[in-house]
Image 1 (tube, helix red, strand yellow):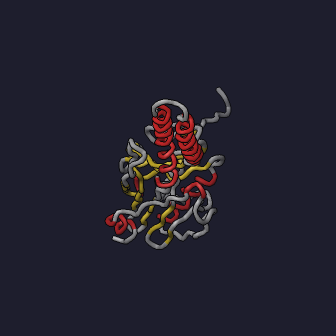
Image 2 (cartoon, helix red, strand yellow):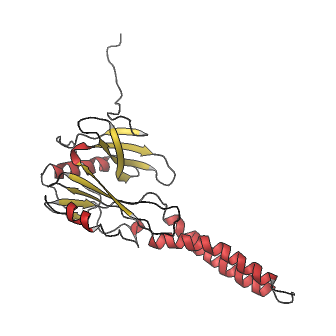
Image 3 (cartoon, one colour):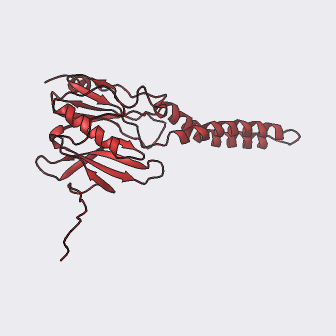
Amino acid sequence: MPLFTMDEPQPRLNPPIKNWREDMPENYEPQLVPPRLSWLTTLNDIFVEIPRYSTEVAWGLLLLPGILGTIFAVGFGIFGFLMQKGVDGYWMVLMGVVGAFGIFIPAFLSLKMYFTQPRDQPLRLNRKRQKIYIFEYKHTFFPWLKWPVTIRSYNWADVRGEIRYSSDRYNMGFQLFGSVCEPGTNKVVTRFLIAKERSSQEMLCQIWSYLSVYMQHDSVTADPVETGRPDDWCPRKADRWPDDMERESTTAP
């Protein structure tokens, strides 16, 4: 029988998150790392709001094909008109127009998504109500349509923290998830993304610590690591919160 055993840590929640790396301390317990945020939108005695980057689209990959597609579409149309000289009928012109239209449509959609689709999907934690509010967009099948806003809210006492590692090509790195469990159990009902870091778990642990400390009515400082807005989040800001959720999430009971 071995003198020493090295039991590897196991996920606490059921079902565990895919590519699980670490469970965070319970949000009502003393936190083990100094609290700090990467980004901060609003902090006061009632609620804190932090921004989240939309991870569903690799935004930078949309701009180049949009620009190049537009250029090729114009060039294709001009080419059709130039080649028509000395040719009977208008079939070259028609070919150029159809070809230009076929290239321009996906190029236009890429540009529209880059400049108009939403980026920021913020979180609000109201410590007077002890609830978390999650601002999200419901993705539509057609990218040129406006994405409708949905708001989810949960009791903070039912939320656990988990860190996973994503190996997805366009979303690689560590991710901090909030896992909503049935009251008094470790059975997960749903999960939502809180934050992500490409190379280190440490910042995610500090973010979880910050949110937990704030919701315990302890003092926290408004000194995030980054200020302003990330370049990837421009030019589109988040839509307004619906009036009823704006009022509920920012006021005491």
